[in-house]
Image (tube, rainbow, N blue to C red; front, side):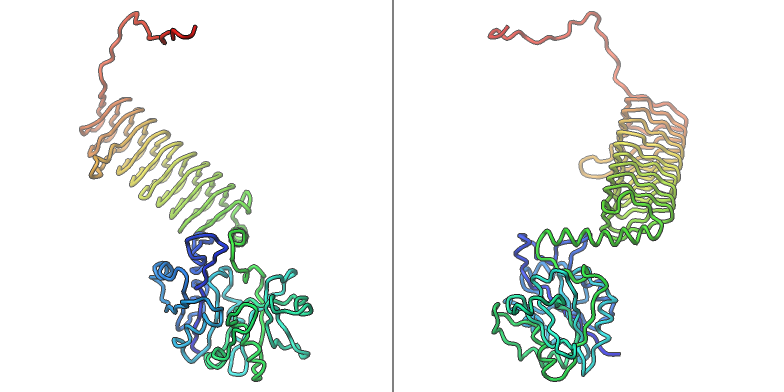
Length: 459
């Protein structure tokens, strides 16, 4: 099997994005565009992957520090041919595939087809037929139908401008072919740049056949130059994901109002309402119902659970048959046992909530473990932070905590205990005991309520 080098061009400034961030580090579905391209490229199992960097080079090096890539630096942007030339000395002796870091939706199958065309007598070129080819280089074919040149828009004649088959810039050839052709490139054109596309004419001139392939969909090869194109590709990507989810049996209230920024795995009969965002690794069990406008990140939600609207969940595990929200916030380390409930305006962090336990509303529970069938009243706070360190609260089975209580950690509430409403608990409570800690109520009869003073200048 032939060796494979993949060269990804990522040196451009992307000035039309109007951003301090290099264009290829802008995210699509929560992942930088260049990472989408790298992930697709890795599926081809290349022997080496080269990323040509220039503008924002250090930011790109930092962003890709964990990737098995070699960098080549294009200090001056003199065109795509010049960019590829910077990686020339790093290439092996097999095949070379040239990709672009701002074309994030390209599919592996399209590239596999392209690479299958390559040998010493043939190179591969990915083309696309567009209703409106404005701005694209046109594919010029001879009378036999062979591709013999690519003419850029600014250099094209009126007859060539009428051609609708366009260049994607994505091509594959042998390393030997590329090393023959690149040194012959000229910058004698309207842009004064070294066009990689000129190698097509060189191939034709020396008798190398240019075999073309097309992607399944034109959106695969659409590049990003500005925010509007970025938004369009984001929706295209999300639409593809929505179609896959629905094919797997997921019910989406509106496929156009779904955002998956990572990987979402769903069991049968999951329902997802409008405006939900899923980030990182999210798993939804069978029959899970997600209400509108929820944000769920790196979380597993067990079967038959209901997440009501506007809940924010991160780094949590819900075992199943759980009720969450509306307006709940489950922070990292939250673990809900079967049938546990976290209600509206409740925040949890590093909290184990036992089977059948309820934190129904307006409470904060952090660094705590709740047993089975605990009831936490409205306004309860586990006071877990002393300004320097976090402390743990232990609540046993069948505990009832009255509303507006403060549990000052470290503290243990024994099994079956009751905490009276409005209490501040600073000492352990024994099993089955009642703990009440309140200031004495004071009453003064016939007390005159204060009234506003009369303004002498008005009235």
